[in-house]
Length: 603
Image (cartoon, rainbow, N blue to C red; front, side):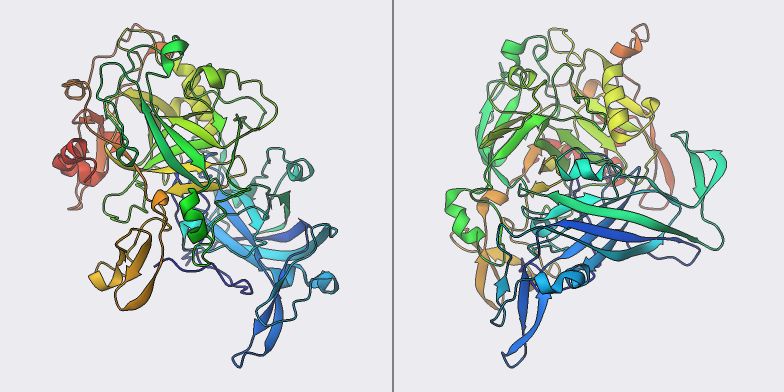
């Protein structure tokens, strides 16, 4: 059962936290279990921004208790080679520190608003001057490695580590981290995070050419790490819902039901979208995403058990090109620029019937082409030189028939780009320069150029979550708990929620009443079915070694895995036409699971 956000007056050290996920999906902080030397990091967190709200506590007899500052500073530590999307393929923060608001604002108690009634929340006036306050923070234990520190102050106290719908900062929170450009980032510039080194350098080099780090016998303490929280977030998380599907592919059965949008595992372009711009909109399955929540769900979203910012003024997207840390426009499909908001689909684990868990071993993601209009190529070309953000109520996400497969837990492992063909049916190139694509992804994921491989093969079937990502790192995932009636304590019927007859609520056996359900938040993409009979079965195809590398795909490798019986086994490079590097061990052991998901991804 979905529960209310953390109490407005609670100040607690939470054991879990999720910042994005997908490779994209939401996952907890890794648990720390150390019986050997380890590292710790400590420093000062400095907050510059509005005064916080305060709440007057309530005693058991109903009388006024002590006032508390609403919210806390959430400080997250990520391994530098496992950063959260869109900067990397990391699936979790390595550790978390929490500085309660009562501690952070202790030096300005006389300036804080004063609630007078038990349970009342008092907030500063909108024109109240900003303050700068500081407090100490510490995090650990941590293994030897290179890290980044990111964080935010949760001003509205709605952070909850257990729910996707409340696991990230919302409008009014103040973001930041351990930055090398804190003044510029506070004004909206792309943040540059400092690298924090724990351990001693050795003479050995890692795959990125950096010295391998080892932990000293006495452990390690890194002091003086300054975390700055100064960017007041004026956007909420990019809450969204699907309102329309557009499918004009020539000679194919068109997708018309927004509840069952399905991309074939072998989808081919008839002509290159980048070389035939006028035809490009007819090459993609496209969907319209509306920012915020449907009008009919907004009242329910205000229920304190959900409490979402899904209505005006938080019902618009900010559309503009993605730029890397050097300010260069990112073009995953040259010459078309990538844009914010980014829309990324992540393959879901079918073992989780609530569809809240993504595969991580390997992770499989599909990045959509996001545009304002139904012409994904031409409209984005006009954005390439944009220097200001365009405020739009909706965007279109065009399904790109390619996937990225990687093992986030292997930060030095190869990243594979998989597409049914790098050329269209008419032989025009869909990806004209494979080396340029490899270079873009190598820079994005901080991997050597040689660790990015482009394979031809069919897309892994199944259900995929949708993740919408702002430039601020704020993100939103469908499906989520606001739309799905979930299991709350196990698989028994008595521990599972059930939809109410009208679909607008979820009930739990032996618990009176129901909690609101938002049907628009119960949505996922399907990948399955075939549009080119016999195409997948033809893999592996012969690779023309005479082509230059910029036009030549890589050979799919055989896969060695430890099976369910504990034996090490080598599997063929392709399973039913799908590169085996993109499939789980269970699927490789039982190919019939793949066949079932191809034939019926909706089950």
